[in-house]
Length: 111
Length: 115
Image (cartoon, rainbow over all chains, first blue to last red; front, top):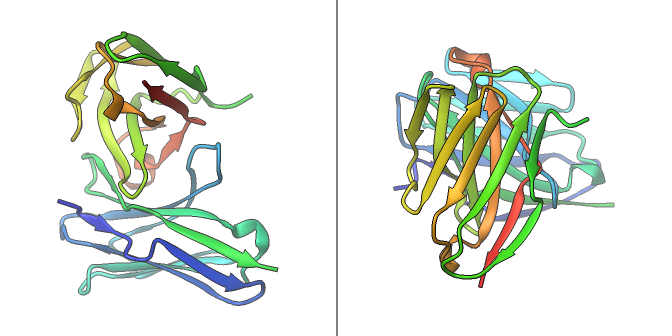
């Protein structure tokens, strides 16, 4: 039973344009959400997070939006750069409990 | 130097062999985790430990065991390896409970092939 889903396995975007990565979850008890970025042959690295008490969090070119009523979060990257090409995982946790990860979206930014 | 290290980085073994994957961290975090990544399945939790005396099963613990030798060390063992345990294994750490302290930090991974 996949509690966190990323329905798009891959996404291609032109350099300079916006990348939008989506994630859906089923458990309304999740209260903290994170995005991780993974390059080949490396471990996932933390990118940005959002608490369930917020609906938006920005960090430079990266913005995460949370829509609790739809149980949906998204990661916006503006402007996209070739170095952003990686696999992106979303994760959700109910504080004090285990993380649940999505299956990942492979982003390719075309120069 | 990396905060979370894993050894070995790559391992090939045969069915039925016992192997151990090791994880060390210098972040001073109490919590440590073992995940496996399979194509199309994302990251799935095998075991986790909130402190040296605490061990908990994750969603896919069958066929695995762990040992928390110290705050900084968390080992994963496959008692009798089987081919469907071929995967990429990641160790992770976190500071503790409470929103931002939940953020996990990952090692570089161990690629395991069971023949």
